[in-house]
Amino acid sequence: MEGSFSNYLIKYHTKRLRKIRALIDDLLENKNEVGIHKLRIEIKKIKAFYRLIESIDPGFESKKRFRQFNYIAKASNDIRDLQVILCLPEINDAKKGEFFLYLIKQRNKSLKNFNKALKNWDTNILKKTEAKVKVKIKAFGDVKIKNEINKVLAESRENMKLFSEGNEQKKVHSLHSLRKLIKEQEHNLKLFSKMADKPSVKALKKLDSLQNAIGQWHDSQKTLELIDNFMKKKKSPDLMISQLREKIGATIAVQLEKIKALQNK
Image 1 (cartoon, rainbow, N blue to C red):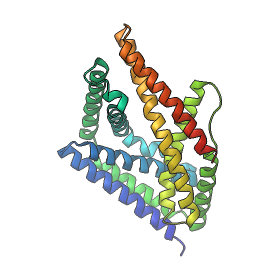
Image 2: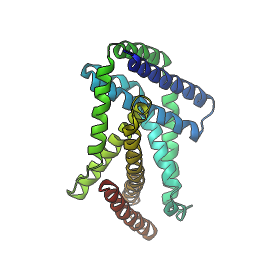
Image 3: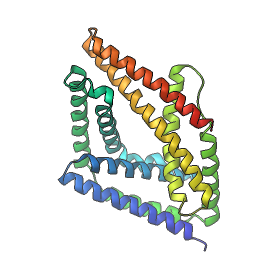
Image 4: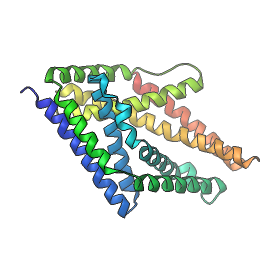
């Protein structure tokens, strides 16, 4: 039936915004890691969705629509990264050391930024955004949406092959970009799995494996960045931190080989 896909997209968008409102209300009353993580995921889904709408209609300007989420997204991502790093086995071995205390300090700083973002949040902006997006989606026909589904499926297959073989800095940048792109497509493929046939589900499973592998690499890479920042501030040699850096470096090498293997499947 013409317009059924458009209606589904409108309902999906409304559901996402309602969840965000509810999570923010809960977090204003009770700060907790589970709630922060759920909010972070919902915001990522909205970002992926806005990019999808922009690809159907370039006049949508996804960056402009997502701007209201930028500050709270940045703070929640920082909290998540630090929390994951604090749970790494290598970091547990370094508990009570200077670097561990440095990580705790960075996490507390991120929590402070997150609290500030929550207090400055304006729910009225969400209502305006919901109305504008609804009008935009209503103008889409099923044919246009189906074409976009096929396009995303084709891109997901191509993204499995992407990996820069250049210098290390270029490789890191390439993987960061690929990780974000895969996560975006993963959210939209989950949306499409309700609207499309089995190829969407199959593509989703492949992307999920690659996303998990790159996610683990990302956590190790962020740990290296924090170690390097800590060592710059310390300005004196630290054998334990140097050994920790070597361990993380070795872990990254193994993770990169795993990523290559998944992409060549």
